Amino acid sequence: MNKQPSVARIKVELQEKGIRIPPELVGRLEAHYNAPAVSTGRIVVCLDSPKGDGELLPVFIVNGKRGAASPYQLTETSPGTFEVRKENAFYTNVTLIPRPPFYNRLTSGNIPMYKVAVIVGPGHLRSVVDQRCVYQQTGQACKFCAVQYWWNAAAVKQSEQVAETALAGYADGSVKHISMTTATLNTPDRGLANLVKTVKLIHAGAKIPMMLESEPLLDHALLKSLLLEAKANGVTSISINIECFDRELSPDIMPAKGKIPFAEYMKNWEIALNIFGKNEVSTVAVVGIGEDDASLLKGIETAASVGVMTFLVPHSPAVGAVFEDMEPPSAERMLALYEKAVGIYQKYGLDMCACTAGCVRGGGFSAIKDVARFGV
Image (cartoon, rainbow, N blue to C red; front, side, top):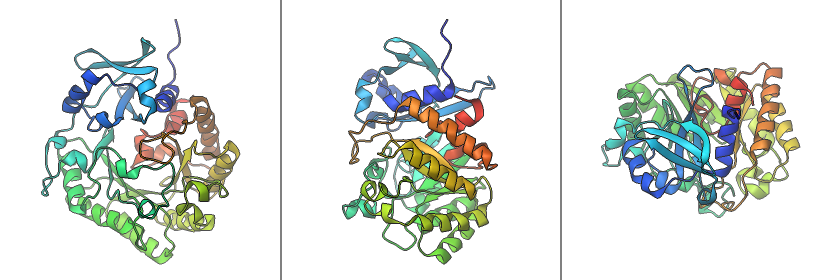
């Protein structure tokens, strides 16, 4: 009898290849499950924790163009029971989160709430509060990014609409923690001020742990002011995202953002650590956009040495991105990098599992937390 693959391996293999969704299943998934963007190739499935304690571990999948040729197919074996089959043989059982009640509601501006924020894992609400990126508007888009097409969402969302949606999800029991990010705006705060406005509105209605994501701010006094305000209003975690540690490659991959000096990241991380503390400050590095392992591991260690954890995310080529036809990183490469990264965090006394809110806690976008918890 073949041994069941580890949770981490299943996650990286599904994220590498995508997952075919039979056309006859799409309508049912949209109507009854947490699948508001399944028709545009984005879906969350959940795996059972190897501890057997009933915990569900999410896998966020962006199919892109490769999903149609994936060897993995979602199958409903009986009403409400799902499995993934690989080349028509059983691969793994999966659970789909039921459609959250708030998806059926409208904001005060008559926008469906599922177009404002979505569930990306058990209890994890996520919103890209503004999807209009100045870098795309000026022809300097990051080549791996398709933020304008994220999920099946309204491109522009008012803070009030995001807060209404978050509080509706909290009231119906769907939301336990929140992560929010934004495309880069042409303002000194780069969009962070709008995120802080949003968390203040949410915090006024419910005390929910929240995480924000931002790019570095060159105005350090402004950054400190906004992060202090965020912390006072329920934000427990912050990610200031570098995406690519290779400073020679990054200006080509990220024509605008890639020119931000590494010293600015270090200063922004220092400010964030002074406010949020150990295990609550992270950055994101995208794997598979042209970098080599040496640059990644060197960057991870540099960040860890000052107290910042790197949330490694495999590049999932998305339709609409410059790199939409690029091959994703292999599952084997991702597992090896995760294992080495976890060793680095242990060396510096960092614990990814201690993060209070957001994508690191939710774990749907990356298997690094699963490797930290359960091994490869």
